[in-house]
Amino acid sequence: MLPGRYIPKRAGPGDDLDVFIYLDSEDRLVATTETPHAMVGDFAFLKVVSALPQMGAFLDWGLGKDLFLPIREQAHRVRTGEWVVVFIRVDSQSGRIVATTRLERHLNAVESQYSEGQAVRLLIASETELGYKAIVENTHWGLLYRTDFCGPLAIGRRLNGYVRAIRPDGKIDLSLDQAGYQRVAPLTRQILDALEAAGGRLEFDDQSAPEAIRATFGMSKKAFKQALGSLYRERRIDFANRGIQLVW
Image 1 (cartoon, rainbow, N blue to C red):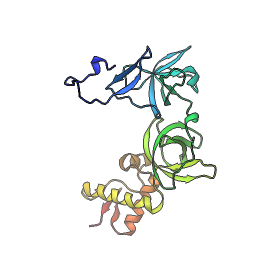
Image 2: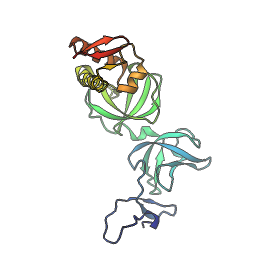
Image 3: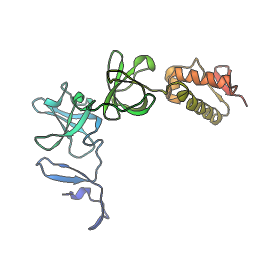
Image 4: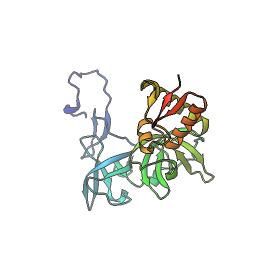
């Protein structure tokens, strides 16, 4: 059943519609033209809209009916207003779509096939003493070391990263920047493009704050300094007073 409120105004018999199908509160299959923030098999960062001590919690996943997070599926008791990283699955007993914060059960199920230097999509899931644990491409755990970047990362943030190394035990070390020349070459082009767009001068140099560099160029200060060094050696930039300028 597709409730009337979800039917587009000009839709009629014979028209094709993209819909999402799930069970309603009475375990009936229903369809909606709304798009959830995540679907079965996805990891997502969702807000707790209500928490019931004896039952579980409900999460906002973009549909009229909230997503249920049972108590038994909570690695720690969640609170109303909290944001949590969850995995979305179909409960084998009820057939309903539910969430779980017990992420370990749904990661590293198969051997990773990643290679060093490979670009990957990341979801920041938790903070550790060494840095941040991230979900790599919706399938594996990876670790971003605190020494490799400046400033905190927000839990639930999605960003691009790179596989730095695959350890003998199969664990994945990550980086926010490419390694070696593969990293420097595109970054030098990015800096040159920014200089040209700014008329040939930027108030950034190797003394600029790491946070400002990351916010403007999307790279670490270490990578920025390497790119500047490469451009300077090629005589394509010069260092001015509190900034850099193009050598025309």
